[in-house]
Amino acid sequence: MTHDFDPLQPETFDSANGEYAELRARCPVAHSDTWGGFWALMKHADVAAAATDWQTFITSKQNVVPKVAFTGRRPPLHLDPPEHTPYRRAIAPLLTERKVARLEPVVRRICRDLLSDVVAKGGGDVVADYSAHMPIAVFAHWMNLTNDAVAELTRVGQRYNIAVQSADMDATKESSLLLYDMARGIVADRKANPLPVDEDVTSALLATRVDGEPLPEEMIVGTIRQVLVVGIIAPSVMIGSIAVHLGRDQVLQAKLRADPALIPAAVEEFLRLYTPYRGFARTAVTDVTIRGRTIPAGEPIALVYASANRDDEVFEDADQFRLDRPNMKDSLAFGRGTHSCVGAALATLELNIAVEELLAAAPGFTLTGEPKPTRFPEIGALSVPVAFEAVGVEAAA
Ligand code: HEM
Image (cartoon, rainbow, N blue to C red):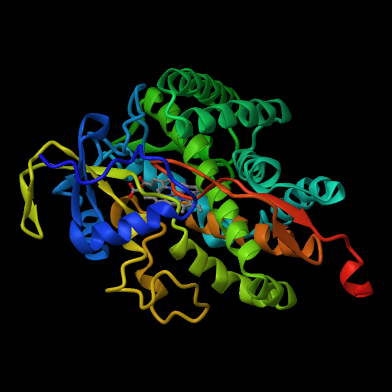
């Protein structure tokens, strides 16, 4: 099998996008020998079709490249229908737009608290000081965790994130097991003290019945373990990438600061342009031939959402930021089909407020160094050094 690209090559913040543009043109169904070998779909049409056809492209074998799930199945992402359905149904009502809108003041307070320290210092790292913390705090609130559990999740969640990003398999395993312990603790606590099912995801999972039977407890623990991580890494990376873009484009930065009503549309476009995932995976149950290339049954296939969303065949001038794109519904930032992001409304709320508060915190900010990129399975910013203009500077100028 050919080795069309190496995901372990050193990258800059922007370089993967150039490489993916080249692969889309030259080798849109690519193969890499890295991590035991995997395929990568680079074109929008192919990624969308595979995500939609869950009967052929299953997730229950390997749901991410590189494979990091050593520790059991974690619904809903690791299951195919019909097993997937009850977990998704239990979670989804707690993540509707209406439900998460109530978290707005909490998100705003968390953002302001984090930013006030960084702005007071005149600058810092948008990711390490801001975006890596905010989603964890919001998430802990959404899950009704105690203050102690929030502190623990912050600590372990960050360790897990760093371990995955640095491809340190031993540390990934170790922190994954700690997250499992946390999930087990949360489930035990809700069993003893249930909360209303329309307010608490763990209680909703515990109350779910399939043919009169409760869901297996280990699978409920797996679900909690899944959402503990899936909901915290992508927003952190995304906010970092948005800060890079706004640091480079001072005109857009000033425009959004002056007119925050434009921020939701800008965030949608940022989600397309800096789609934070490239490694969600499927496995075909039969041999499949795409664009003349045959992928044998049983081999992992990465759906490179980040590449699909910069496909010129779907998005005109795809590498450019545009506020007024007519076809934003084609964006695959939140995936598509059965496993599409159930947390999209919460993620969007977090991103909108995070950007609003970042812009409101000071009259301006600039990049003070090269942003550091994340690695597979994410793509985006891991570190974004910035300096904030002092309040009053603009008025005095
Ligand atoms: C910028 C933020 C986010 C982005 C871009 C994002 C993106 C995605 C994508 C692309 C998928 C599809 C995975 C696949 O195709 O295999 C997904 C699934 C999922 N996301 Fe998100 N996500 C974000 C934030 C969140 C948040 C805040 C939550 C909170 C609960 C969340 C929960 C989930 C869950 C549970 C799944 C699995 C759904 C299923 O298998 O049915 N995500 N996400």
